Image 1 (cartoon, helix red, strand yellow):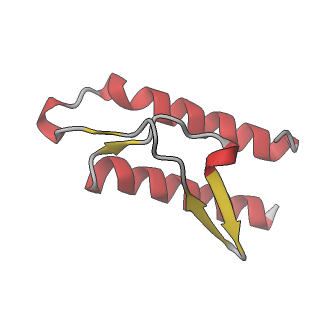
Image 2: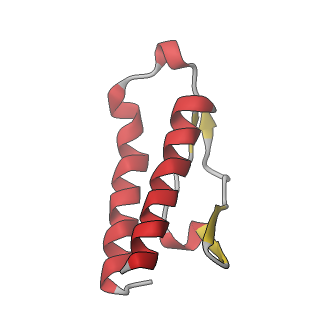
Image 3: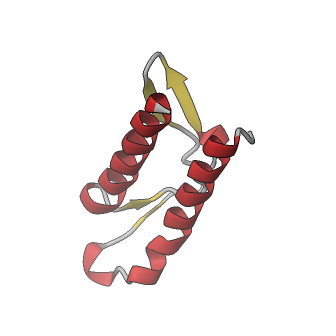
Length: 81
């Protein structure tokens, strides 16, 4: 469970960094987009990513990434790949 918590925190931090600092919507967050390197996660597959301007961003635009992140957490907990 400790590794899950570490990975969940890392995933949330990465997505927050993408949205808040880089203004990027990943667009395809799913378990296969994350690679494990020892105790670190690496986010890959930016093929559906889009850059947005902060002043034109609506809260609803982030829902896709947030929902996919929640789904990934659920899959991690249940062991589904």
